[in-house]
Image (cartoon, rainbow, N blue to C red; front, side, top):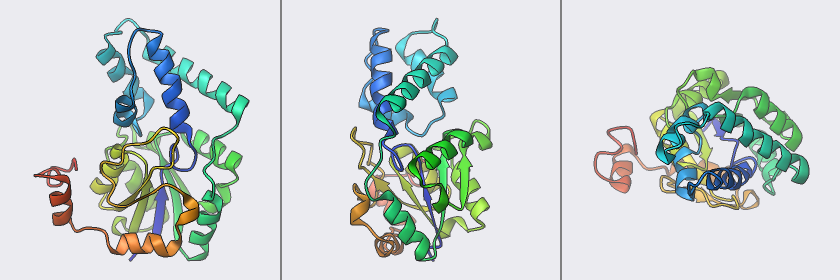
Length: 241
């Protein structure tokens, strides 16, 4: 029975992933490497402490400092936000309000630090809708696609994983939901289109969905066997979807 809805933040509650992509593309181009949407999809939901060393190895930029690039990235991001404001998705507040009124518990589960999650929710005026906040930084170095942050959110909500529906914009996040024993729906409303390969159901506009639609998706979610057939071979058995 659906009891809780867990939202990712970046790319789901605000269109930050599009800005991150543009900044990283420029940063890496200045260093002679082509950062593509494939990279965005690969690292979406992965903490930067893990992303930068992997990306620099791939780019052959072993003399670069991951920490220095992380700082540059966030300095550029903060400048964009100060200049342009947070990139909102229309209808988010209204959907969250309707989900709360329908009796569902709500949480955010993100790779971002807790302080940044709270800062963004306050700036978007969405902080009053969420019962709990879960950050992957509370889970050590086990970010998405590992299930830890979703299990942490369910634990904080005092809700069984199988009674949760996750809203995600990345294949890593959807794999994490699968590994957590949860059902999920994809959100692809970002300006730079996210990776929906693992989406069973998807939507692109909060103004077009409702609590009833979320319940329908939850109740019609494929079984484990159907997931395996949909995503091919032994992927579901191996926990990688």
